Amino acid sequence: MSRTGENIYKRKDGRWEARIILEYDSNGKAKYKYLYAKTYSEAKAKMIRAHSLFVTTAKMSVGKEASYESWLIRWLQSKKIQVKDSTYIRYRNIIGSHIIPELGKYPINKIGTSMMEGFVYNKLTYGRLDGKGGLSPKTMSDMLTIIKESFKYAQNSGANTICRFDEISFKQKSQEMRVLSVVEQQQLLSVLFNDFDRSKMGVFICLYTGIRIGELCALQWKDISFSEKVIVITHTMQRLQNDDPNSMHKTKIVISEPKSKASLRTIPLPDFVIKAIKPFIGSPNDYVLSGGCKAVIEPRTMQNRFKKYLKEGNISDANFHSLRHTFATRCVEVGFDVKTLSEILGHSSVKITMDRYIHSSMEFKRSNMEKLTTLQFSESIYRR
Image 1 (cartoon, rainbow, N blue to C red):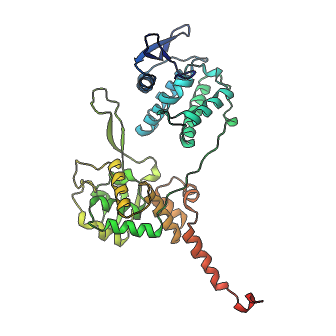
Image 2 (cartoon, rainbow, N blue to C red):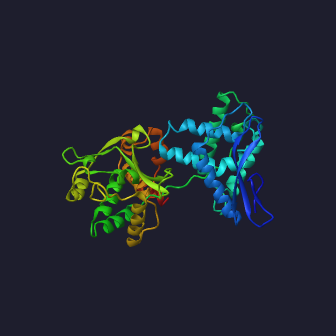
């Protein structure tokens, strides 16, 4: 059934009706677009889709007491030239799917702290679009960042706001990183070198350089110098929503520069990595994974192949990003200095590297505790 504030209603004829606000007239009265469906779920899906498309092209004039929806759209449009396409699309989807349907119709100066706390609680409890529970704390945190920035934008434009975001908090669940143990790493290597091909080579490269899956998929042979023994990261690959109304495809492959300047980096390659990948070398513009200059292997494909390799090696489940965590953890264990590791990983600050990876695995703790053996006293002491 519909929830308060959703603007979804069941009609007398049995159909469901969803409404989205298109604009406000000079008197501040909302003008609606009506969407119809046979079920509540279909109506909600149509509304979410309409919101996502609408916030891309909407042009709303705003006053100091305008609706929050109009301020959100203005803020989003200002971000389009400031952030990457992937970030903009993520902002747009969150705004269209979650924020506007529940908060958009209210004047921004009427959205107080208690209303925002209720919004956060509802999203964490049953905010998933598939109806299967609440959003993750990470998603909620990202959503609050958008809301805070849009409120600040409205304030700087003369709007009055009363929400105290410093009074809003919720429990953050820290997800433990999945790091392959030394034994699991050896098991994975055994799988990789059994019929070593381009995809397995890609996993091998990530395991010993820590590059991200998108960076691997965008890698071309011109980015690897065998004479200098380095790999240069200049691009990343993603599959994003396609905004082209004339296209038959909902998504598209986008190859662009990485998310930060720090991600543009040069990584030295050890000799054993050079030796393993050199037999596959192709033309400079060929992609490393596909072996051609036009065909690409996208991240989702590599994720699926990696999962297959884990099953073949009887290794507990992990996602592709665990290769990056494993690389960083092994580097710490063998004594890499933090600044060097941070630059190799492409982190924007050393603090990120320290917070994320300067921790000890049980194996590393055990090996360090064994060093106490050198301080062992005579056995006669223990017999007293």
